[in-house]
Length: 160
Image (tube, rainbow, N blue to C red):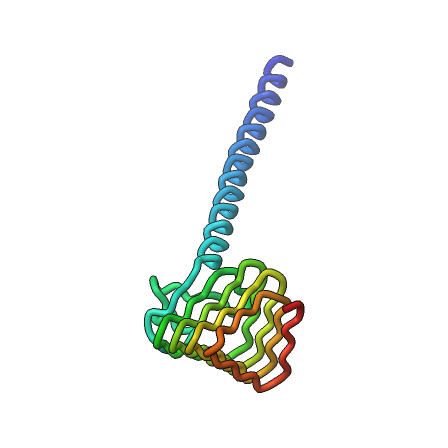
């Protein structure tokens, strides 16, 4: 009888140890996934500024080669003075998104723009914004007196 109980306890302890090792591994995997997710979110939310003219989708035109999102922008994007940046698709922005077009800079969007609450557009004196589709924004649009805006579709400035 004692041998039977000993074998039973030995097997039971082994199972518990295996489960606790798996549990620890799962906790580590879960922690790693959380860290990676937060890092990816932080990378996507970083501000960006053009360092030369070119296509928005080319990471080489952005400072630090960090191409900003154009499908769900939540950071500030600056088109620096004298640069021409082309975006060949729609642009959507949400909370915290800001597009700043500096003096003598051009942002050409071959699509539509949809900016939701707390997303802003600023076009400085001498800056140009060209949107071939619709331009829809809920609030916070700032066009300086000598800025140029061209909209090929509907213009909806919402609460401005």
